[in-house]
Amino acid sequence: MKFIDEYRQGEIARRLTRQIARLTDRRLKVMEVCGGHTHTIFKYGIEDLLPHNIEMIHGPGCPVCVIPLGRVDDSISIALQPGVIFTTFGDMMRVPGSKMSLLNAKAAGADVRMIYSPLDALKIAKKNPGQQVVFLALGFETTTPSTALTILQAVKDGIENFSVFCNHIMIVPALKAILDSPDLRLDGFLGPGHVSTVIGTRPYEFVSKEYNKPLVVSGFEPLDVLQAVYLVVKQIVEGRAEVENQYGRVVERDGNRRSLEAIREVFEPRDYFEWRGLGSIAHSGLKLRSKYAGFDAELKYRAPGLRIADPKACQCGEILKGVKKPWECKVFGTACTPETPIGSCMVSSEGACAAYYNFGRLSKVAGRPAAQSSS
Amino acid sequence: MCLAIPGKIVEFTDEENQIAQVEVGGVRRHINIGMLDRDALRIGDYVLIHVGFAMSKVDEKEAEATLRLLQDLGSYEAEVAQDEIH
Image 1: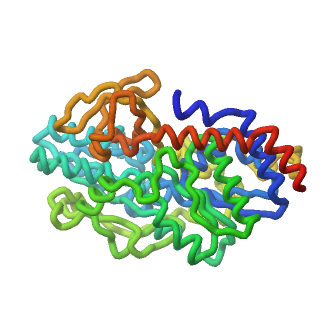
Image 2 (image 1 turned 180 degrees about the vertical axis):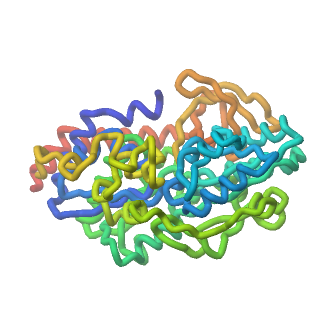
């Protein structure tokens, strides 16, 4: 496929990794913020290709992984109300709440439907005027404009039996929280490519200016990721800290004006939003503006709205911050597997635990084969 | 979650509702193009698709420039040049 196959050439990848190895033998920690990058890194074995001194730290950019337990419970409580058709992306179905998942709720008789696009939820609402259709909206700025445009479409079409349970979050406050965290020392970042098609590269400039760390916005094919790692390491070696854009084919410095306008029209920041692992972060989540209150499921339905602590055995929080590796969690791969997940990091294919588990990184030894040269 | 894939515009199906038919790996889908500047779109253009919406037009020149850079970075000559420096 055009714009995909070109960025998957093994020979260039091998040469690129040799170039990275030649840049430095300093130990460096580079965080890929986005779960999509985590997936690419494991799917293509990039960890094994990179020299040993470069450690990839997996960031919190997986919206399914960072959604707090209380919000999962709220979703389930809405889904269980009579007359409700509850719609969501496939990733959310297996995420465990404190008592059950949406999949369990479906088995218990709730009308929970997996959809591909928020526009599908709107279609379901049109077809079922006697029922209430709720869409569980979640995701970073990549996904937020699609929810905004769907709500605007509902206004245009005069659909009143449609509402949104909004869990949209923003990447920049999370990045700030990580940079301010005392637990972690990072040398640079791979910036999220698809979020950046919407917000552009300008919002990351504080990372280089205020925190003196390089950030390279990266595409999602293996050569994209390797080139972005090369650019981050090169900046560190040359003593630079800049925002660079490796994904110029779809990302512009100022982002997508129409998408940003749609977000601003429909949503406004919440004072606080809770993230699994990172805690409560100011102005990091979005809610519907009062103008669109009729589409706000949070106002339409009474959900418990409780803060619920993660199960004690689950270490998703530490893993999301990049402080622990999945194999350091006691339940990883034993009690917690993709079939019977305890924590959300094991559910989404972008979660670090699911990536480690599915691609056979079950222990430290398996994680980094000793045979690889570090020169 | 933030997964998005490139597809080729084959038809502008419904101008009023900003819907185009886009081909992704041999499969055709109706995609909302409301996030993009309609005047800048032509049949045959590639767009990046996420949850039923085209979120960005693929800039072919930028794509070529990245590929050239990748090929240069990974080339034998670049490796030799680096060896000479070290």
